[in-house]
Image 1 (cartoon, rainbow over the protein chains, first blue to last red):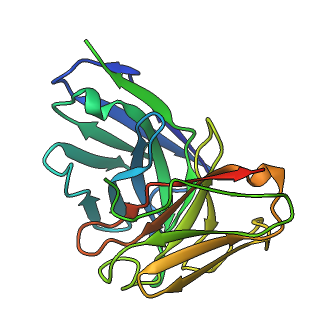
Image 2 (image 1 turned 60 degrees about the horizontal axis):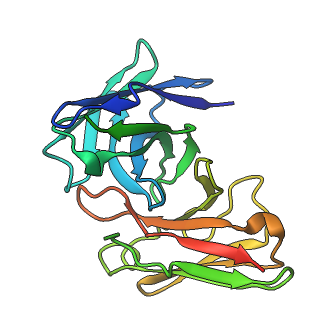
Length: 124
Length: 111
């Protein structure tokens, strides 16, 4: 059974960089059938896609255009992990951050497995 | 503001059917069959309920069904049960670099 687990600081100061890692177990992050994504959810609000990475040979990244200038997603296939960095954070970046797997075909690309989520609060 | 529009709430009595809508544009919902629906109970991660407009992953009850007409996708929950009370989010391929766009979510209440 595939499992994803987010890890990282739960508190980040304004203007600093939020860093999270997603550890994948029960499957290979290099599997060419899958993409790997980050999604966030401010408390009591809706879901926002942050970005996605694919590493089935060459590495490709896709970012939400509204966050693109502040986001970097990377992958470490040797550790079966992928990571999120969001810089210059403000209180508006306070949210539950989820990592998830996209199961992509030519006609669909849904998130079929999710981590449990981790709350990151931006506050001094 | 979310890219896809959902009504904030919906409700129905046990045994009834409820339909939740998700409206986008010809650049996302209307242009592709990449529509998915997620169920989220309080304090839990979202769960995939429908993908590719109308397909159900293994283990999802056939009480859940999806459809699309033009720029609007719909999720129908038939034979409502108490455990169906949750938030439901739609998503679609957004075109270009916007790999994924979500709706704002609909809170389904089972009366």
